[in-house]
Length: 337
Image 1 (cartoon, rainbow, N blue to C red):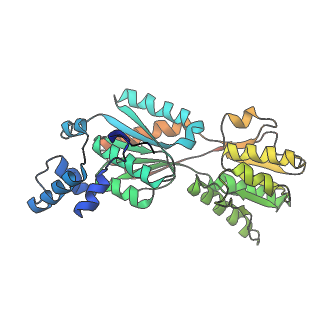
Image 2 (cartoon, rainbow, N blue to C red; image 1 turned 45 degrees about the horizontal axis):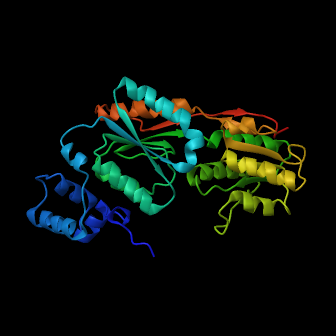
Image 3 (cartoon, rainbow, N blue to C red; image 1 turned 135 degrees about the vertical axis):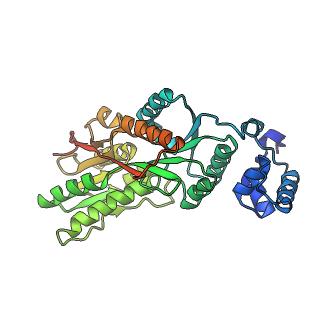
């Protein structure tokens, strides 16, 4: 078995030091940056934990401890690269005006990796943080809030004293679309679950449930993908071999394309027998055949607005409304009648 060299061993993080010393992450950060507000006995415990674990704080970050870095950290999941291009363009255009640098962090759904990203953001003394991510837990958001880092949560509605959000309103357009189908007598409607975007799917399901309830009906059409399946396509291929629905709603383009392919493989005609709508539009919804009906979102505007809000937070401007809603535009294409 190959022996790991030092650089390949698992890196000790600020989380490990805090746990070893029995203190908060904020306390460890203050000790690292030689703050006067930490008691001597607490400082000694943290220093002993640092020595014991061999923790090495980022030297550049320590040197910048008393300075602004004019740096904004942007965190996105690696699964979102299809959608993030226009968002980044909006962020960069506004950042250039205010002379801020954008540092990009990518993540998977692993909790340990999210901890490492938080660790890097804290150590690098970012002025602010923009999160394009459904995977942060409330505890992790609170951890960042404890460090008094201004944050903008992009894509999902969430706010507190240190966090503003720019979010897409999927509730109303999905509700209105489902209500229209119900009025036309189409009730066999299903939503494909998406483990990578839980809050967005939750919003879609709530909108659909309410539309059904308003007509005295009950919605029970959420199709969950079992944890045993690593690929939506594998599950959907099997599912549509024995199921057919009047309307299928997905959140991501990749799931919509999987539905297209699996329906074709199982002899289900779209849109004659089954209609298909993808909530989150991308360039791929127009590239495939038939083209997929979807909701066009103002991605560039979302990025630009998030950066403008961030500059106001960094300037200490009073922000009364911390949650900013953007609307979508439904674009029917060839997968709906």
